Every structure is written in C-alpha cells, then in structure tokens.
Image (tube, rainbow, N blue to C red; front, side, top):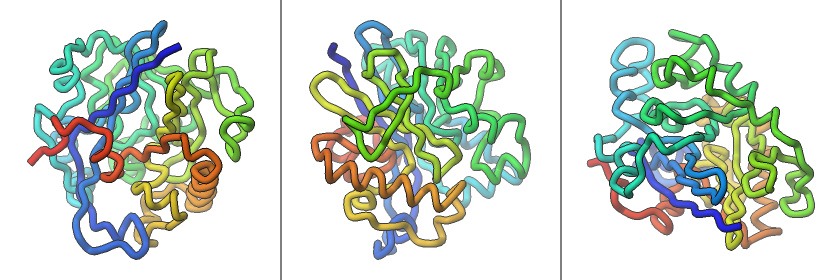
Length: 283
C-alpha cells in the first residue's frame, strides 16, 4: 500500500517564543496553521485539519470572541485558504470526502465549510466538550461556533467507535489506538492535554511513518528535549497533567523510534523543512 501525504499551511498566528517553550526568546514567532492532504489508494482524498479561513475575522468581530483575535493575532489572505491551495494543486474541494479533526480550535477547523462533501472524524468527548456552547462558555474553550457547518453533526463519526487495536509493539509507549480504515495505515491516538481528547494521527505511507500531534506541543524542540512551555500557557490546556503525560510519551517515542516523523501542527522548524513555501506567508 502506498499513501501520499502533502503538507500545507493556511495562515498563521504570532506569539513570543518564550510563551511556548521555557527559555525561549521574546521575539515573535510565526505559528503556521498546518493542514495535511492524505491520498489513500482505496479511500481517496482526505484532510487532517483545515487551518484558518477568512471566517476567523468575521467570527471574532464581536465580544467575547474579539478577545480571541487580540490574544491570538492571525494573518490570513484568501490565497492561504485550504480550498484555494488545493484548487491550485488541481484538486477540487468537493472531492475531499473526509476531514479528520484534531480538535476544535479555530486554526484547525477554520476551513471546514469549504468542503461540503466531507464527513468528519474526531473523538466523542472532544465534540461533546464544545457541542451547543455559545458566547463566553464557547470562548473559554477556544471554539468559534460559526466555523462549523449546520449539518456538521449529521456528518460526524467518532474515532472512539472505530476498531481499537494494540500498537505497543510499533509505537510504545503508546499502547492503543483506533484503526481508521482497518488496514493500520491511519491510527487515531488520544493526545489529551491541550484540549480534551485531542486527536493525533499515525500515518504509515508504506515508506515513511508520520505522527501528526496537532497542538500536543508547539515546537519540535519541546518533545525532543522535553521542555515545557511557560506557565502562562497553562490557560491553553484542558488538563496540564495530561499535557505533561503526552509530552513525555512522544519524547520517549522520539528516542525509541527516530525514524518516525513527529510533527506538531505549528512548528516553524518542521514547516521550513517540509512545506512548499507557496501559501505560507500571509503578509
């Protein structure tokens, strides 16, 4: 089996480096909103997350969501959108049949409305955490309700309902995951901490193994050297204890399996190596 994986970025936000890693500098760093195109030989085209869209600006015009925009300055242009970039690559957004969502923050779900034929996968408790929330209760979860289509729930499948498999032999210290297609090519993993039941994804292309860890950390240096973020970042965690546990897990995994490409969604170092520069900068 041969699976193709391509990495893109749909806009970015900026934060001082020292917020996301202890000992970091005060310089502003661009944290790109990565989305991943996956082409499965039998299941077709799908995405892991979607990055930002122009809807972020619309949805953060009014209180309390305008606080979100001030805390997290976002830089985005139309040509940075996931659907736009896929069209430029010769892919019709209508041909995307599945979007696997790591969690429900705006930089991960911003473009889902641009894929009308897509179904969705996430963990059940991740969706229940934000379902029906509006106003300040939604803001506290970092969730902008207007980013989801009205028929979202009818197209949603929970990763928890998929076949649970033992993966300890290949991916220890991770012990279990959920087999998305029943062929062990895509395995969904619980990476709770940054958000409740955040979804990570192992992708075995047949030649390489990628581990998409979303916001389980923000910089590759964090998991490689087991460096925590500044305590200010605690406000971004659903559970700091779980965040530390998962950070330790992929720190250990990186030592045991250096052949696995562990990829945080926002790491500039990772993006410089792997993403086509077209569409990254929105300035």
